[in-house]
Length: 175
Image (cartoon, rainbow, N blue to C red; front, top):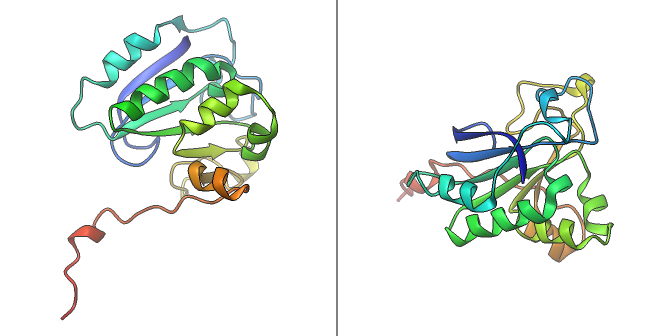
């Protein structure tokens, strides 16, 4: 698979400590993109899915894998294989895409369906510079949605992901 880079300890690309893979190649080329170096599909470097899985297993504190870009759905089969391996390790998978969930779901492409099925949270929609906000969790512009993919596939419509309060489990019930 062709990637631009990896980050071994991201806290901004999804909930918890994440291993983020920035795929190389993006057809969207959103104005104001924070990763314009990932647009050229011939850029970056080749790496095997197995090598990425090996990197993913090195940190026992890792909460999950994040597939970003570039556009992960441009390399959906490889990304789905990597996501499946992450799930096999008990990790969550977040995928960022410039496509809308509905387009990915309805496209009839087996590789896109496979990646969707291996994604827990999908951050969908193109980056829109006029809707950019630093106040948003895990997304760059207000049009982008955080989608609970499993619930969305069951219900046949986009179901928004609800962020859990990480301190909720430490709350003492009132007596």
